[in-house]
Figure 1 (cartoon, one colour):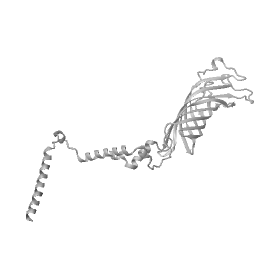
Figure 2 (cartoon, one colour; figure 1 turned 90 degrees about the horizontal axis):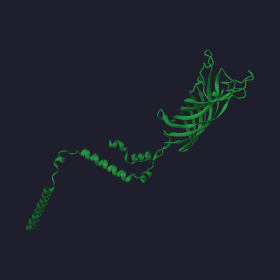
Figure 3 (cartoon, one colour; figure 1 turned 60 degrees about the vertical axis):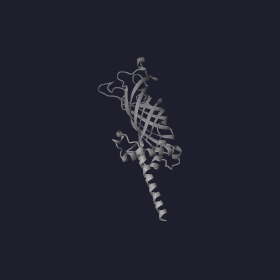
Figure 4 (cartoon, helix red, strand yellow; figure 1 turned 90 degrees about the vertical axis):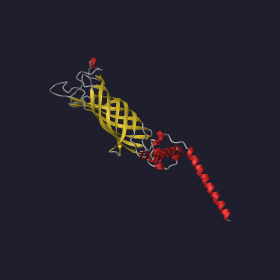
Length: 314
């Protein structure tokens, strides 16, 4: 029995010596690290951060497919965004002039008023999504037509003309307000404009006479630059991404048609045109009006799964 025990102990010692020899042999065959690499040790924190970034990018690329993101339950936001539009408008108008001294006159129908607009919506004070601004470029007409005055037994004339139509180009800048409901909106505009009177046509009427050189020409005392105030109300039909707007606008010029002293330097006369314009416009949304875009939804899905990755990467 003692002999068997001694043999068993000898076998264990032999296996232990054999294992130690194999480990020493592996250590001698390992290549020594390069001195340049060993001179620049990498911290364990840096290694850990790099490994986490690589693992996160691999996981996001492998798992965040469009099909996977579509399975997430994300509440879609229906609030109105800060969006913009371009549009074209056409309208007709009625024009008259505020005279000083006052004169008896009729409204003149103006069949041409058209232009292009750019509208940008934004939130007032950062949270009221009902405001914006609108700029445009328009061609229009303004003018006057005197009516027979029975009390004075004559029709007033300017340069022998009972009627005149003036072509004008203008640039309006308006504050734009809107309230959206269902697929409609209520619109209000107010602002100012600057313009230039391009041409004029004078009509003698029944009792007048216009010199040939003045039928289609301005006089030196006529004012060509125009400016004033403009505003109105309307409503719109929304067919995303297209909107149709119907508006009634009022425009009042603050620039007289002629120099105040063109008749007399002692007695000034003024003539301020004003127009009522009914227009229809088609507007095209350049950005999404409501809800979230696909990129916004994908970002929300990533945050739901992995948290805010932007803050963790910093």
